[in-house]
Amino acid sequence: MPLSDRDRALLAFEAEWRRHGGAKEEAIRAEFAMPPARYYQLLGRLIDTAEALEHDPLLVRRLRRLRDERAATRAARAGVR
Image 1 (cartoon, one colour):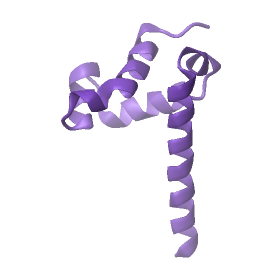
Image 2 (cartoon, one colour):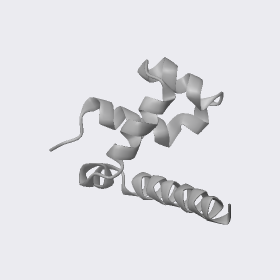
Image 3 (cartoon, helix red, strand yellow):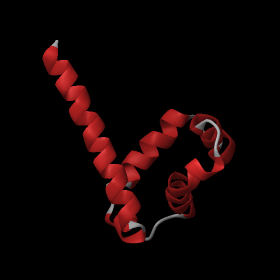
Image 4 (spheres, rainbow, N blue to C red):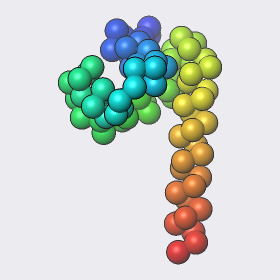
């Protein structure tokens, strides 16, 4: 199944948002008319798809690595308590 226009827009935004400056959450609301939590939920599901990986392998691998690092950090903190 090919990526939807929204899927491509999410990936493009994630690849380019730093160049625009400002707060990312504000930019998400302005660009997609959705709360940041929903954006991150959709992005998380999207980067797990083969279609997203094929569309932009460098970005998707970077996002997966960052997500995995954050999860490992949270798990380590939870284990320390």
